[in-house]
Length: 158
Image (cartoon, rainbow, N blue to C red; front, side):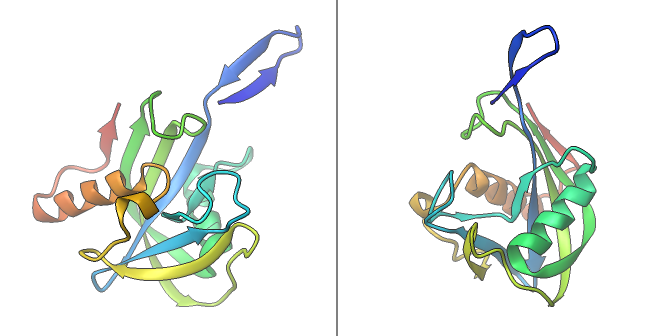
């Protein structure tokens, strides 16, 4: 949640909107390892993603986050999932848009303040649950189920 104050001085706790990217190439999934200095989930693996900026849409945001966190330029394949669940694992980011993103060759550098490493993992050899941040392992497991039995996209979780 974010605390906001309105013109009439009233205070409100508002929900954040975040974007995340499922970047898959040749059966491998791109994950970032959050730096030890990250405010939330330090030293944990996560999908590339982050907060929606004020003047961008979710598609622009997810491609920006992939670029900033991994150094890869991306292209959106499709919207995979919309998560609108107030009791999400990280209550500060409880509205999420998860996109399937295809990337080209790496052409930039990751943000070393926020990210300590960028790694490709086999979909069947992911980090342990205790090493994963946020609810990203749940998102990945839903994607793996989708591969076995495709569902209409986007999947809506509320």
